[in-house]
Every structure is written in structure tokens, then in C-alpha cells.
Amino acid sequence: MRIFLRLVGGSSFRTGDVDRARREIDARYYANFMDVIERRERSFAARFDTVRLGPLVIGDLSCGADVRMRFGELGAFHVNAPMSGSMELRQGGGGPVLATAAEAVVLDPTGDTFLDRWSGDCRALSVKIDAPALHDRLESLIGRPPRGRRLAFEPRLDISRGPGLAWVRFARQVAREALSGDSLVQHELVARPLQEALLNGLLLAADHPWREELARPGGPPRPAPVKRAMDAVRARPEHPFTTTELAGLAKVSVRRLQESFREYVGMSPMAYVREVRLDRVHEELRAADPGELGVSEVAWRWGFTHQGRFAGWYRERFGETPSQTLRAAAR
Image: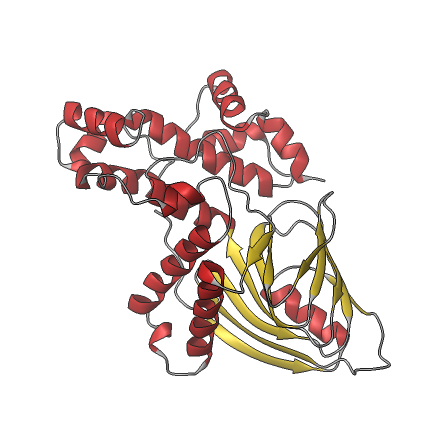
């Protein structure tokens, strides 16, 4: 289980200078290029209220004039939900999508991102979500690694009603409380459950391959020994676990742990260790600089000592070789 950061703090930022606004977005969200499209009707007047809550950055953003922005790959999931006005965005090779007060846009960690027009009358809830944290939350909710498919959202999210509207309202309320000063949201005992609730809420509100499974009434919950073993693996996947050690941590016999994992997780305990390690390798290779990091180094760090078997497992899990993932990170 990843250890989320507690609330780091909020920022209320105001400026009429485009370059200062660009640097603020860089510091809070992503490196970017920002340009005012036209100044005749409205003066540029950025108002950025942002707060970091563990794996999320939640912002109430407006610019006062029409602007356009250009980003590289975001490296995180991102939701733009206008409260007024509109945003026209493109990502990767996809066509333009329009974010409005009725329909938000959900962006992927991969693919160059373009905000072709952020209207001057647009005030938007802008939420950055750490990709590994969201993957971990999904795995925890479904009780197994999300095999065979990657977590990818449909770009459009209905925020005029239902779960989408409820999630947007919840995120705004959390941000307002966090920015209000001496708030309980800033206490770790409150911040951690709110982080999980926001991640859970997005997974329930937005369309992705596991949404229906999450929305259905659950089957029997995983037994406590299985959960203890899974939590230990996610906390230290690089550790040289054995089935015997995991059974000790789970406080059951080796046979009982193996039977429970097959029933509730669909694989053996050591296969689960391998799946979690492969996910960590994949995350690191996607974020790496190919000129500074090699596949063997990453594989070794996460406990893979046999390169041939590792390469085969990786290709089966992600549909490409580790080197292809690393090369793609350079583009």
C-alpha cells in the first residue's frame, strides 16, 4: 500500500502577468507554454486557488481572457470540470473535446496535451491525480492487479447529474475546506480518508474498463489474512518475499494462504508478488530518461534477477518489451 502524503498546503495566487501564471501552473501542475489569444474584450487576470491533498492537486482556476496552452505528456490523470465557460482540449492523436459546465474532460497520463482555447469566462475545477496512486486504489478495490487492460478513462464525464456531479461537488468542498485555514482537512486522520474517497469517487463516476465491476454489489470480502499479505507486498514489492514469510505476516498456514489467494485473488501469493513488481517496473520505465536508466537496473531494483524470465513476464503483462516502454518514454 502506498503511503500518501498528508496535506502539504494551499495557494491563493493572483496575477495579470502571463509568464508568472505559466510558472504557477508549472509549479502546481505541469510544465507548459501559455499564450493569450486575444486581449480586446477581457484583460488577463489569473486567479488560481490550489491545494495539494496527498496524490491529488485540486484547483479553482480562471484566467479572465482567452488563452491557449501546450503541455507534453502529463504523467498523471487529470480532470477539467468548468463551472462556467469552456475548454477545448486535444491529447495524443485524438480529436478535440470540449469541457463545459455539463461535461468534464478526463485526460490520460500519456500523449502530448493541448488546451486550444480556455475561454476568458471559464472558471474550472482542475484536478491532477497521481497515476500510481489511482492504480493502487483500483487494485485494492477489485482485489487483484488489473491484468490485461490498462486503466484508461473515456474522455467525457457527465457532471450535470449523478456520480459525476457528486464527485465535482465533493472535490470543490474538500478544496474549500483545505484553503479555509485551520481546517480539520489538514489533519492526517481526516486527510487520508478524504484522499481515498476522492480516488474511489472518480473510479465510480468516470467510464473505464472496471467501472461496472466496481458499481456492482461486491461478492464476499477478502479475508483478513489475504488483505494483510497483499498490503505487505504493496508496501515493499522489492523485498524478497517467500510464501512462508507471507503466511507468517498473514498469520495463517502456507496451505491456507495459498488456497485463499487462489479463491479470492485468482493467483498464488508469489504470482501476486510478481504482478505488483511488474507494475512498479512499468511505472518507472514510463517515467524514465532512457539516457540515464537501463532496463536491467530497474528490473533488478524491483526483485527480478533472471532477465529472460522477466522479459517474458513483462511482454505477457503489457504487450510490449521493457525496452519499447523505455523508448516510448523518450518521445
